[in-house]
View (spheres, helix red, strand yellow):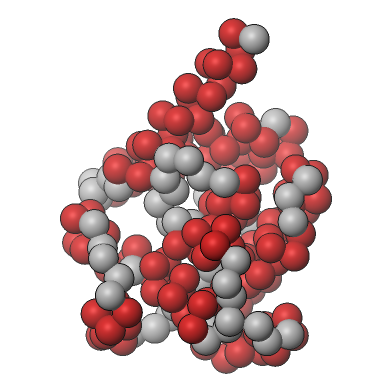
Length: 194
């Protein structure tokens, strides 16, 4: 794997200045969450740095990388081009940046939609992407506070917020997002019974 500084310079050259500011915000948020949740700060830093490395690639480039890499998009992903950067980003993380840690690769792969069985790192990157400091949407300040006060409740609320936004847009809802939410609710109920 390249040094972190080399990786960062390479990513900065792949994205717009606005996207780079977003990535820096996700890194800051993910590192803070990792520290609070006893998760690998280094893993959080690398996953956050690379989570949007493919976001600004042209659609035809993403499609070629999907085809050449053998990425299998599910039915919803196949119809939603804005989701393609996540699986492509995981491939680039492995091929171009030498990342071999499967948890980091999964955090990059699923940061847009989530999934059932998300690891702690996956949850951290998913949430950090939604609440990083440059995000400005109604309710984000309240969500940030919740995430730092009660991470489990904050993860659930982040998924709820994403689902609400998708429904308001009239877009397709990815089954992974629903599965992630359902699992968190089950975990919450199980913890309450103890």
